[in-house]
Length: 139
Image (cartoon, rainbow, N blue to C red; front, side):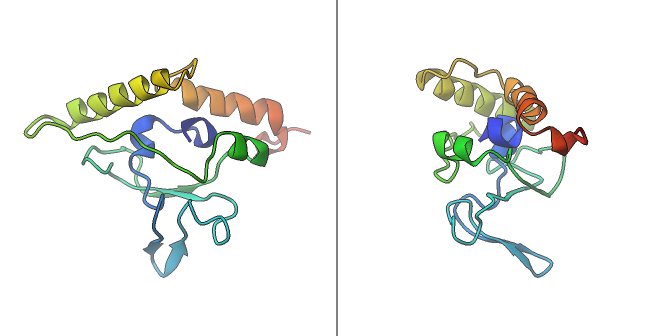
């Protein structure tokens, strides 16, 4: 998901509609797992992660790289986040760092050749540049 949306692991942990609809201002974005009602895989990113760390970017709705073959290969409609329970009374930055380490370890255990948190954001930009130049205003 980080590759397809260009997000850091912490931002993915703030997704509001992975498994249930998200409604704000009378608008509903259906769950990512609901291919029928959310065929373009719109994802709502919140202000805070599910463990309380700030994303620093606020609410927004984003779309993945427009390459459905990658959606299927990377199983975008079957999101899996690592389970993470921070210790009590630690700073939010320590919580986010702990989740990022857990995420990196999970990616490494899957045999993923890349698991540095910002590598996914850079890979997303490269995918758009190479595979879909019209999004960047190029012919």
